[in-house]
Image 1 (cartoon, one colour):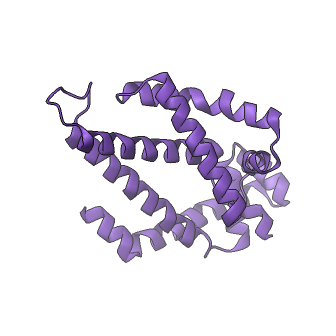
Image 2: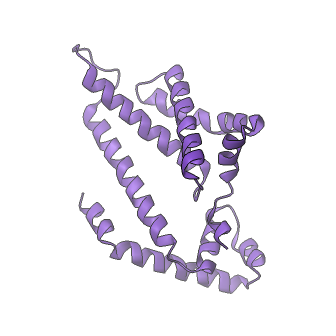
Length: 194
């Protein structure tokens, strides 16, 4: 049952650990363009984006090797979140190191600060969500994980060998319970006040 909590995109993490060239190439072809586009829109160029991607892949590899990283969300979201966070940190550091009065091409430190703060809040919310998600029963976890994937409710009902009506009702109840826990959390209330 515990195995079901690992997202199917764990295959990319395993590929890094096993040095699976074909799948690692897939990581670059599928997920790098989004990061390159993001970096270019945020005061960077393609070379800087490629360096960032390489650095983040090494971070993920290290997490997988030393901390036995298990994905519970799509690889794309995880990878992009780390790239985004790393890039904002680099911009912030570069802004502090600048000694000339030249504007940092399109760089607005106030906007950057807000974006870094948003990213950190997103991380905290994701952590809270993951912790509370683990409190749900196994059926709830399975239904929600399958629905986060691209499975229809009919496919989920078939896969879990339950009726379509039960699957829909159960999903609604599970989301309701999770939402209630999230909203009751002191951390959630604290984040809302920020």
